[in-house]
Amino acid sequence: MVPQRLGRAAALTGAACLLTTALVGSGPATAGERPPVTENATVVPVQTTGPADERFNLVLLGDGYTAEQLPEFRADVEKHLNVLWSIEPFASYRSYVNVWAVEVPSAESGVDCDPALDAPRRDTPLGMGFWGGCDPGSVQRLLTVDGDAADALAGLVPGTTAANRQIVALANSDTYGGAGGTHATASGGNALSSLITPHEIGHSLGGLQDEYDYYGRGVPGGAYEGGEPASAHHTVLTERRMRDQRAKWWRWLGEESESGGVIGRHEGGLYSTKGVWRPSRHSIMKTLGYAFDQVGREVMVRAISSKVNLVRAHTPNTAPLGADRTVWVDTLHPVGGELDVTWRLDGRPVGTAGARTVDLRRLDVAPGRHTLTATVTDPTPFVRDPAVRGSAALTRKVTWTVDPAVTTRPEPVAAAFTGHTATGAPVGARSVVYADTTHPADRTLAVQWRLDGRRVAGAGNDRDLDLSALRMRPGVTHTLTARIAGTGHELRWTVDATPATGAYELSEPLRTVRRPGRPVEYVYDGPFTMRLTARDDQDGYVVSQFRVDGDGWYTYYGWPTDADAPFRFTPGGTEIDGLVYGKLGTPRVVPWDDATPEYGTHTVEYRTIDSAGNTGPAKRFLVTLMPPAAR
Image (tube, helix red, strand yellow):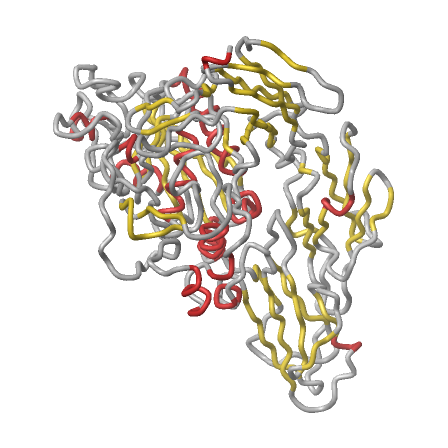
């Protein structure tokens, strides 16, 4: 769990993710006096990408929201999700995920012991409570949930099981708190709460470990004394030994980290300050607000993909097929890129340019039995390990026996779309949009794409269209259509090619400097604040991000103690509950990190990510921090 959450959610133990399964909040009524928690529950499909038993399902529960406050729960859900979709690999694989919200009106508003032990206990369906469920021996940040009640509510979603879902329970509270594990929890309205969800899924789904160099908040960890960790993102090896042994993250060494800095060997992790190393200076498994680095991202790609089957359906292969027909596979469709399909007949490649259907009549199949295969592979650049690429998570093969002596019985199949990217909301200009069709055995249905009425030339895989290759102009509403050739069957999407616009507001500087050809410069001799805002021409929560001096992009959330307050930069950072925020220059996360002020000029960039996945262009300004004596 996050020591920004673990620390924040469980400073008692300091960091390890706490399982909430057996932790039960206590309300004023006993279980025998209240009706079943499911009695007034409503399952709301927030995002449906396919049957629940074929997807990874994120089930969001709300507690302490009265009937009148359910719109607030929906807003909290939207914020948590849009932050999740702004982080890779969730951004690229959101089409593998179903999202469900289970709404249960609470008799009373809020949750138990919030924010103190002397706060009232409230009558809520999930019995969520701070202080580990109002335990004086616990800590205020530990937000627990009744695991049985959470399971009962999640069980209302047909097709979901403990094996294919992650439960996240949101409490109606602005107080920082949470917990992780089987039942992840977070306060719905706190500034940092939406950043807990991806971190917790990193634990629960990916098996990633915490990269903190402390166990208890504010107390440096000791030296690591174990052998080579089983963790994919911790090591005792040097970079040379990693390369020589082809071990751990040797394939990523020297790469610019997605979360800032360079992939290398950074000391500290597994709750120790010395003797063990992690790949990046900071990532989401160390500091809330940053992305997964490449090492954690590769793990998460495999973890998400292992919950689904890349082959959604295919021509039945239980009996030999005739050579007088078509054979097909339907694949999944990542938002971030197309899957590859390679066909082989008796081991020899069949040139189909990635098409999902092959017409055996064009192959001049010789008499006798032959083996036809279709291999579906995810070519994502997020994966470099051949073992991961070749695993069932990223590679699937379907095999058929073909015998020209078999005659295919005519079975009329009407042309129709069988699945497609949702048309009810705009799609982003860098998304992959898809349209699947029925599969007559006697012909191949072609899908024709048009953008603003103009034909879009496609390759052999006409079921997917990568919009990023079309370079659409922003500021214009675009219309995308997919039509089954020779029929009247057509799908239509609105393409949102215009990113949200971001703006900043700074506290009063000593002076403002404007020079031709340079960003505007603001001069300070001490702390200053920055507020980021965003505006979009479409509905949906917009994520704002910033970075300093080219470091990793950091999600803007206001200030840790107040989501409505601006972010505060200081020469040495501000310590809050054992963590440090806002040091200008090299980030400082814990009190023992270097606090030396970095005077001089710094570049601050900011950008937006809207609900359609469009990332706005980075804009920048300069901040010069002067020593107080140099006024």
